[in-house]
View 1 (cartoon, rainbow, N blue to C red):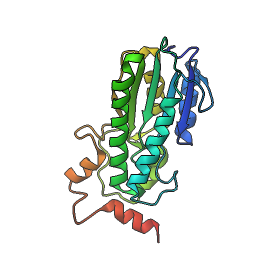
View 2: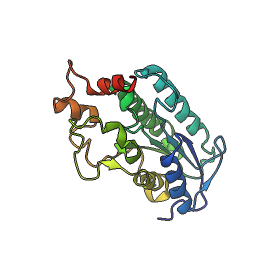
View 3: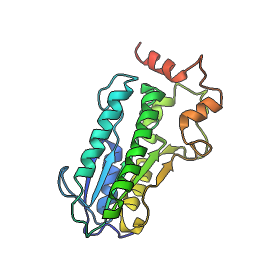
View 4: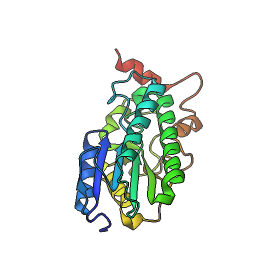
Length: 226
């Protein structure tokens, strides 16, 4: 894959292992990383968790607002040059990162980011802008958030804990000219966690782990505040 040679790319949003892995993958394929706000050919937005934004558990409205503001800035940073292909890649929040904030902020955030990506495709596609979204499951770095919930059947397939490097490789591919005819795609990287439903929370409901009378995620949140 050499579809990023000579490309200017910006990476904004979440910090940490995923950001570092994404930058390494882009640079390895020839991209030059530029500061946020510059004229980029590729804009990658890594959605931060509610904790990174210092939001209280359950604060769905403000969480979605901050994510949409962030991804809108990423789109605004794309080069206005319509003679070249430009690409937006959104990485949705890790399910593991958002356990402490409950299902509502997570579901609202993923839904909003999916809608934003589709809107970019419709509004800017005829001007050479592609948009795709990557949906990681539980990142390996977030695995400790689920250790106290051994009864939740999250193990849907081998490799359900996603390595940051696996997400980064997908981002680099979707950003590159090798994926030049891929736009509006939603790519799950979760080891099959969402294979039978398009939401991990649906898996919990379907398995009877989460019910109207029992919310193990809320129980985890309560234990964490003791």
